[in-house]
Every structure is written in structure tokens, then in C-alpha cells.
Amino acid sequence: MLDAVFVTLQILLALIAVYQFAFSLFGLRKIEKKALAVPDKSFAVLVAAHNEEQVVGALMENLKQLNYPAELYDVFVICDNCTDGTARIVREHGMNACVRTNPHQRGKGYAIEWMLKELWAMPRQYDAVVMFDADNLAHPDFLLEMNNDLCGGAKVIQGYIDTKNPEDSWITAAYGISYWYINRLWQLSRHNLGMANFLGGTGMCFETNLLKEMGWGATSLVEDLEFTMRSASKGVYPKFNYDAKVFDEKPLTFKASSRQRLRWMQGHFTVARRYFFPLIWQSIKQRSLTKFDLALYGLNVYIVLFTFLLTAVIWIDNALLGGPHIANLYGHLPLWLSYVAIIANVFTFFVSMILEKVKSRKVYAYMLLFPIYLLSWYPITFYAFFTQNNKQWSHTKHTRVVRLEEVQSKQG
Image (cartoon, helix red, strand yellow):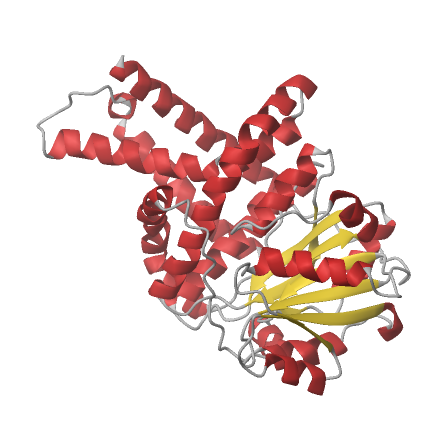
């Protein structure tokens, strides 16, 4: 019986790996950019901020310089439970500082839900809502790109999340490599196939009527994934805009990174439990590959967990218990096939960097440490499984003041 469970699990994990690799191939080609529509849509730009006085000023300067008519967008910074000068700096830049104090409901999801209620009560109503984090920088054409997709009928749009500080440390480089891979070989591949994309927490755009109809309702530790699943269950699929870039600050240290990723995984377990089975059932009833793909993405946290547990059990059985005592299909495969699988996996990250025209020699050198980052997901996910009921939101401190000109200059 136990052998049957192990064999089934190994087969499923292998099939999922092949499935994901096959889908990544559809991101190798980028479809030529279409002509931009005339600026027509109005935007409420929301910025979630908690004690962000060190970085919020750079974003305010950045948002003033967008290539979009100033009368068609307003910036609202949610100063959520701030105890520093965030609100003052926002007002000094002529933007709207919206102060929220609620120590019992802390976190980005709650802050956005509160801000949307405030927004709907204002005299002016906007066609769409765009969301950034306080440490971000937006490409000058970001709103033009969002306008283009909205005019084309899109209701939920995710921009391209890039890294503004990939050279700061090996861990920021690891984030950069991961996001270049995700944008090119995960998001773009789904976009090219006309399937749904997933939201990434920042650089997001939502049609106002949809938000009013659905409500926000995403207050977990991973509000982006939660809203992705909620909208998909209603047949509204997020769209990816490759040219709408937003540059995000990544944690400088492994400790800060681990804390952030632990929060993500804790939230992922919550969302997976809540949405996987309803979404997979819908995909079967409707024969929808799109919903199946999103359900599988939502289950990814369990895929990582089971991969870790299976690997650990096989290793302990062979190395410490003198095994094999359990069925191990992988052990019957040719050794060269294992090497090919590992090389193919690493090679996809390298290919994504080439496709995304990454030129930094420092980042390429940091790739030597990238496997440490990848392997660290396993213990983090394992610990998250046992602490997933911890709903306490943890803030990632941002300190890197970088201007858009510096980012673009380093990218060549």
C-alpha cells in the first residue's frame, strides 16, 4: 500500500514537471508589440505603504513623470499604520496621503480593502485602479500600456515585475533571475497561448466596475494569489502585459528573504486549501485547460512540499537505513536522464536571462549561488506548512533609494 502511494506520487510529480517545462517553451517567442491606443481611461493609482519614508519619495517623483495625461490619473498613498514620515513626504510631493490606523487588521490586503471603500465614496470615479508598492518604480509608459489593454477589453491586468536592485547581493540577484524566468517562461507563455496569468502583488490594474461588482475580499497573506483565484472562479482571467514594467526592491539578506518567502508560503497554503478543489472541479465540468492550469498553480506550494518530503524519505532510506525499502521509480531510470533533467531545469533560468537581455556580469556570476536560493524553498515551505495558521503579517523593510534613470542605465 505504501509503495503504491510513493509510486503514484512520483509519477504525478514527474508529469507535472514535464507539463510545466512544455508550457515554458511557448514563452521563447515574444509577439511584436501592438500600437498603443489613445489615452482615454482614467486611473486611481493606489500605493500601499507602511513606514516607507526612505523610499516613497522616489516613487512619488517617478509617478509625476509618467507618459500619460496628468488629468487622467491621481495617486493615493495608503499610509497604513505608519509611525514615520511617510504621509508628510507624500503630501510634500503633492500626492494624496490616505492615513489608515487599524492595529487589529494589519497588512496590504486589509489596507487595499479600506482604500477602495474610501475611493468609491469620492466625487470622482475612475475607469480603473492600479496598484503599486511604495518601494516600486514604474516604467514611464506603464499607464499607456494599461490603457491599451483596458481599451481592448481586459478587466484584470498584471504588468512585468522586474527587479530594481539585482546587483546588491547574491539574494537580490536570485530574485532577479527568478522573476526574469517567471515573466518570460511562465507569464508570457500563458499570454501567448491566450490563457490566464496570475497576479504578482504589484503592477496590477483592475477595471473599476469589476472591483465594485466582486469586491476586493483578498485579505490573506497573499492577496494577489487570492484575487487571481477569485476572479478565475468567476471566469475573469488576468492578462499579462509584457511591456508594462514595474521595478520592485528585493530583500538584501537571506534572513529577510526567508522571512518574506515564509509569509508567501503560509498564505499560499491558505489559498490552496480554499480554492484548489472548487477550481479543479470547474475545470473538469467546463473542460477548461485554463482553470486547470490556474488550479495547478495554486497547488504549487503542495507540489514543493511533497517533492521535499519524497526526496528526504528516499535519501534517508538509502543513506541511513541501508535501503531501498520503498519503491523508487527514479532509481530505475538511467543516470544520464537525471542529469539531463537537472541541467534542463537550470538551463531554463539561464535561457530566460538571455531572452530578457540581462547584461550584468555580476548577476551572471551570482548564478553560482542560485541553487542555494532554489533549495532553500524546500525547508521554508516545510516550516510554512506547520505554521500556516499564523496570519500575522510581517513587513519587509525597504531602504534602497534608486531612481528609474539608474535602473534603465544599468539595463543598457
